[in-house]
Image (cartoon, rainbow, N blue to C red; front, side, top):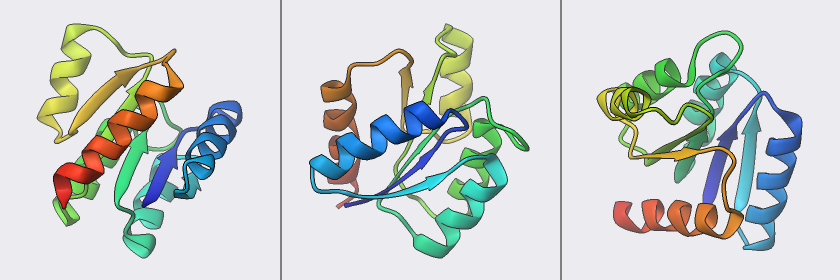
Amino acid sequence: MRVLIVDDNKDILQLVQQVLQVEGHEVIVAHDGLEAVLREATTEPDVVVCDINLPGISGWEVCKRIKARRNVPLMLLTVHAEQGDIERSVEVGADDHMSKPFDLSEFVQRIEALAAHRT
């Protein structure tokens, strides 16, 4: 499975990339919202994981733009954990919303479940 991870926090990017690669997945990274939209269009990953607080455009805007182009499973992984944030994630088309800090094994399970529901 090919996963696009979008986060401006290099530590989170590196951790998630390593965990997913150990699980046998190909990982593509982006550091800001505009780069995320471009990388998604050029690589067509099986799943997108995106932070909400990004330089340039927000993760919510990234989600809207990606979902307007194609229906790829998308998880917003973020410190925004209030009910209103979760509702906004659903409104922009996110398939899942996971709060930071997060459990790595649960994260991998949820990513794999998103991909499985697509096939």
